[in-house]
Image 1 (cartoon, rainbow over the protein chains, first blue to last red):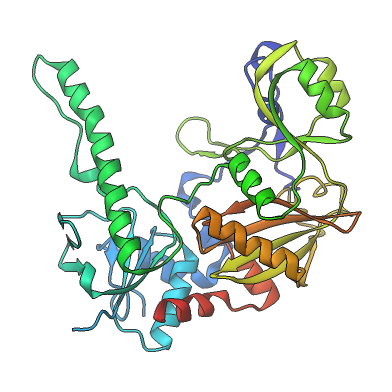
Image 2: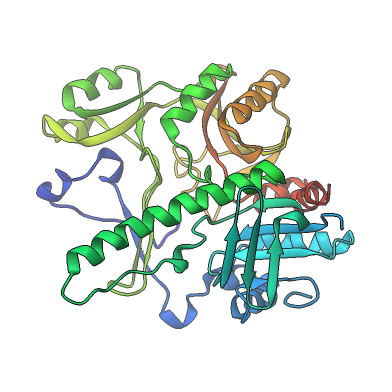
Length: 69
Length: 328
């Protein structure tokens, strides 16, 4: 398991509001805002293409030869 | 003019969409349009048999489409009906705004109907988030074994379920996967969890409605990608690791589960085909557990799940196969 994960503590009153499946919830700190592109970091070989897709001025992209090449 | 355009509904960041498009380019498909969920549609026209969408400098005509892939997303047209503000009449403004939400939903439904009726489609825009208990019932109808489950809210009912043996709990819908970048700089996750005796003792007589299921003592897990009747499976040997034995998504990064290509039995393949047909889907990912008894137990279908890892680990080249399906 991700070593950064810890179990969230709930009070008895809080637990009484939670379905059984949410009585155990894990948490971990998020990366700083500047490095939120975790997918890009995780898969560097895709980073250039993804950057181009995300940064494209055309959210609908006719891709071939124009946005991704 | 022949229909030669392939339309892919997706989002800005889906890697699999990008990979399939690269394959489409490689096999010579020149007219491929990716419509992301963030698309600002400028003009729309639909009638009783066709549609026209205009965005930026491009136009999509239904008559030009030869195939569609509903990879991700379904909230088209929401931006065409924005929240109304009327001076001194907040109730009326809210009433119309509420109706706008329905207007967009129904329009989307009709759009999907037109698309799937007239064009060869992979995936289904209205079936991206299936109902777990309903799919379990349909799976049993199709001949698949499923673990027993119960939806309950009392300790007495839970006690009966715990007599099955080990019991697990998970949401009927989706688990928690929350990245809070704004307030707490914290991420929250939930997984499938065992219902333990000691937590049972601490429960009140009544608690919020919960889904519990019999835990199958497993030999290993199987993830199967279904593509229009063909299946591509991978065994996940998660049972030997205490971290991953109940839910393999609690990845053990230091000692990852072994995952290998796997062939599911013909009767399970046939039942899976029947199940997909009864749901009205032609692609998605199935999760199975193979019990210590050797039986296959169906857990659920994720219609838009990630298949990239199955493809990469097992060398199935699923992106290429999807591209060929779309190219016809």
